[in-house]
Length: 226
Image 1 (cartoon, rainbow, N blue to C red):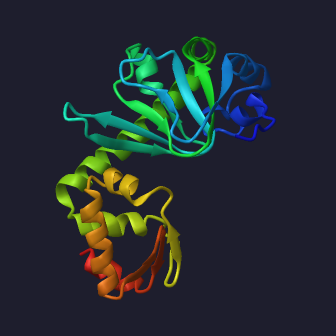
Image 2 (cartoon, rainbow, N blue to C red):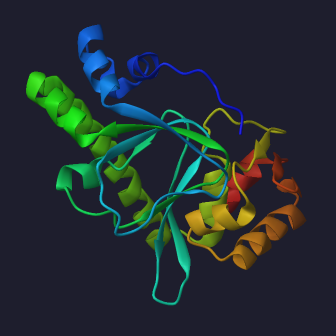
């Protein structure tokens, strides 16, 4: 994988989580941060590993997964550039209860718990920002659970395709990951996901070429979703 020059303090300064910090405070956090390059398919951590901090995605994409006794894998969340993961477990000081794997070549910034706790002691506003970020994630996960319970598979797929409010007729949506990964994220089997795409295509609402989905009738999709 190609290495890139990277300044942790510069990246941290662009993150909403750290935007209220002074350069001196950011320097302290950056001193407790390390880069980690992970190749596609590389394991970042596994369930049961100790949590020593949290991660920020500089580029690439990460999947957080939970496994079952049968060996099945359920994708809990997809994490992209500018997003973070692992904060909640860091504060709980417990081992990870999910696993994290790079879906593509990925560059991470790992911030140690010691640096975070020192930042909180220096400035209570930092603690509020951490709590706000955790609350947003919790709100999103609760929304996912409600979607799984109250919406049909077709409604979930249409919601995924139309999640960008600015999308319009004729727009092309590129699935950010494989269909199997998207299906797991939507709590569907890959076969069910493919059948839904085929059904929407048969009704003239979309067209599908690999991971590229073209919106042919946006009003029809919204009506079809109920």
